[in-house]
Image 1 (cartoon, rainbow, N blue to C red):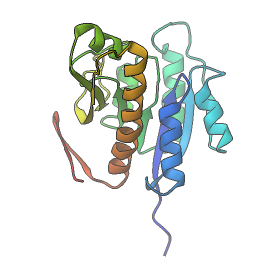
Image 2 (cartoon, helix red, strand yellow):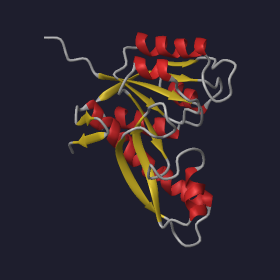
Image 3 (tube, rainbow, N blue to C red):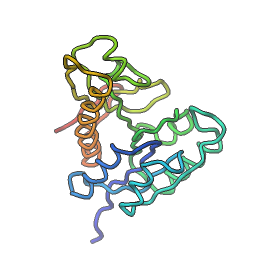
Length: 208
C-alpha cells in the first residue's frame, strides 16, 4: 500500500526568512507533518532563498514586475502557476512584502496564511510593533490569519500575546514579538497539516 502523500507547503517571502527557517526546522525535526514543496521570492538575493537552498529545498526567484507594492499581472500568473505546479496544500507567507490580488487569492481560496506582528485587528500595516508602542498599549503580540483582499483583515486563526515592558524600544519589543511568532506560526502550520483547523466564515476552530 502506497504511503499517504505528505501535506505540501508553498512559501512566499521577500526578506531574511526567519519565520520560514523556524518552520523548515520544525518540519525537519518531525514537529510539523508536512514537506516544503516550493519557496518563491520576489527578491533575487533574499535571505529566505538562501535558507531554502542551504536546506536543499526547491527555491525560485520570480521577478515581481513593474509595481513597487504588488505583483503585476504577468508576475502574479507566474506565481500562481509555480504554486499550482508544486501541488501545494497551503501557502505560507513569511515576510512577503507584496499585496496579493484577487486572482491569486481566488486560485488558492482559504489556503493562504500570514503572520502579523500585532493582535489584529489592532495595528494593521507596516511596523505594527512601533504602532503599538507609540499608542501606549500594555499588551501586544502576533496573529496568524488568512489572507484576503484587505490589509491584514482576514479571519484570525491564532494569536499570542506579548507584554509591553517599561523602557521598551521599538527594537526590543519587535525582538520579543518575533520570538512569539517563532512559536505560534509553526504551531498553526502543524495544525493545518494535521487537519485540526476548521473554517466557518470568520470563525476558525483550532482543535489542540
